[in-house]
Length: 479
Image: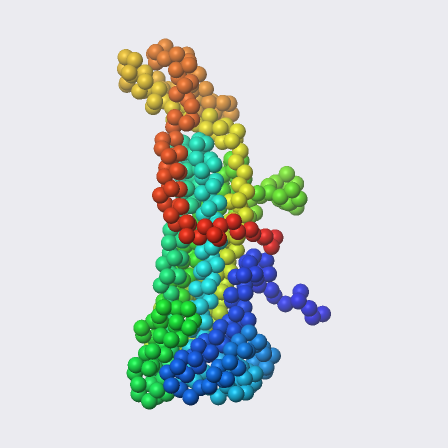
């Protein structure tokens, strides 16, 4: 038996990430980018006086996407060198141009520059999806900006906030991640045309000692590939610090997504908020009644993987030898593509979750009513003092009633009757109606509704406004 079910498949491509992200790290994208770089190099060298014909360049350009993978694979088995196998395979298709392919370059010319391009394109894809996720949270926050809910510190009931205000906390973290992505994209540089150890010696020889032409070739290649510049200096490779910085951005997104979905999982356990649950979805193979937060759990799981994976490029950068050592190669083939594919997956799942969050207002109110009497006592105390009451005496009365009410709730499983006890006590000199009017939860949310509007208008909208044409992305989850 020998079929696709008898060998390991990567769940990141088979189950989780999008086809768009998978394509960026595919052989087709990688090796067609190598060929684009070889064309850019030949064009630049021709423009600077090297004897390369238009016919040769056109032959190279005509075969950029038409990659002869089988021939390259056969050649690599013989020469044991991935770049040279593709140089030779490209030459099989370009008889006139085979002599000028890779002229003056080292393997890192195509390898490293392509790595940068792949990371940059992947960051752009992540950015579009992240903007859509932030927009989902914006809509949710505005919709529920006025709905009071228990705030929690240490997962213990604290002062009230609103459902919408809590969502702004999730969005704020993601805005910070978006800023990091923007900075990294705006400042991405190629390795450029630097030669075997970064000295450009081969190109200086090619141009017969003309330093200006060597410098110009570097600029030309960057421009032809759509980049402003290259790193000013390099060894054989661009500094592996870049890989660590890029994956750190993905780790930041994973941290934000993990935090958000942990919150959702806690709230789903309280039956206050629930992630989407489809009509025919099964929560448990044994317990048919269960509605598990499986999407949020999947985000949490993949987020942990990304955070852990961010250590790999950091270790590679820290342990590179002098101008370079090859112990980065196998690591990069795994850590960078898979971190991006996992990040793509958690954002796509997050889009699904945030687009269909279900809010159970009655359960939220039930939990508020269980705790609000304790929170309202400070306001009641102040009002009673205004009416001539003794602050210390009233404080002691409230303390005693609070102890009785807490015992009733915790030991007897009954409702909180603290307010009933206060209403019946004439010491407070307040009518039942006056006390109950204080108990409106909206009196205890502070500026939460206003903060939501201000955050959306002053922070969120400016951050995503330039991507308006990309908002409205539809996601079709694998499973």
